[in-house]
Length: 436
Image (cartoon, rainbow, N blue to C red; front, side, top):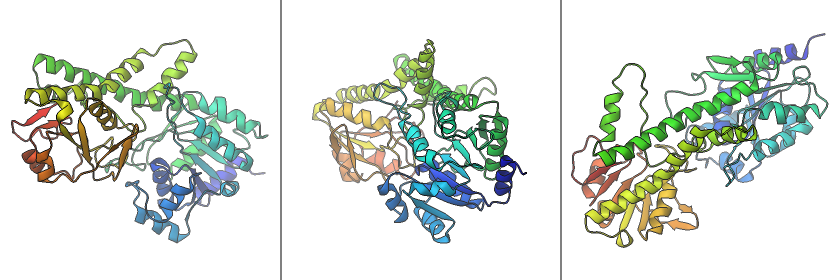
């Protein structure tokens, strides 16, 4: 009798396996697109009718997978999307790609993963592979998901298979995608790992198997903690450089010429997105449960979260140096997404900066080619096109997100003062430019 694992492996190898992706944000959509390109039939599931309707009508804002690409895939019949959870019963492999935010207490909110598992449980069957891609704390897969599957009467590693493989999608990155980015995978058992590796080998050129799901979970958190800590260090060096009267950008560029022992990281107005401000707290939360204080996580978080306030104070001082009080000033914010050339404002430092400037009494307007409306913390911020007239009417223009579409030469020329938080204007020599 053919083993369950062998039967599923044959379906994967022959591209006959049906793949479900739970959670149709940019992670889920990007993964679904890769499986489609590999020839699989893919079903996207999401609990949001609004999101499904946006995808079907070509109004999604996930630019790494264009609306036209989704509509064309739907027309082929190889891709389907819905809120109908019963389709999961017919799937051979399921990837869970739901969000994992923080609560206000900075504790992990794993409710979306738990909800996904609860939705999936009635439709589990033999010869099914389930892979969690959502960022979570070390132990989630084997402490929560495995027991939930076993409670349904399945032997994980024998009847069905469970693995963790953290997403490594970098929105807007045209060089590194799912196909050429190495894929870390950990399985509950060796057989789970083997089946998961076989599936992902169809969409990833290089696999990095690790010994357990916990190792894979910690790997994801360590990757983001590495960036968070080093960005925090760059931010603090930027503050120190101001006190010392040194250009921090010059210092970093000079240090980066060292061919060993140094990797350049850059300061900014704060960190944003779904990973860096959030993921390290999953690690510190887990370690608090084990009576260990993750000091680097707390320190890096404090420094990075203080940057919008630091930028606000710099702007206030800059205005005062030019004879203006901030509560009598109009400030034009350029870019409010967390990252250049993406349509995502989650955890964007621009949001906290705007709140602080408004608290100082400033009149704040913004422009971002990727954001049509902006409301945060009960504050509505008007969107204004950055014409020469509007820029010249503002007392200070503040570049927060350096979108490639910005005509910086014109914008700087039309502005009274220009505060550059990204060193985007490094090639311009104008006395009105002031840098972080």
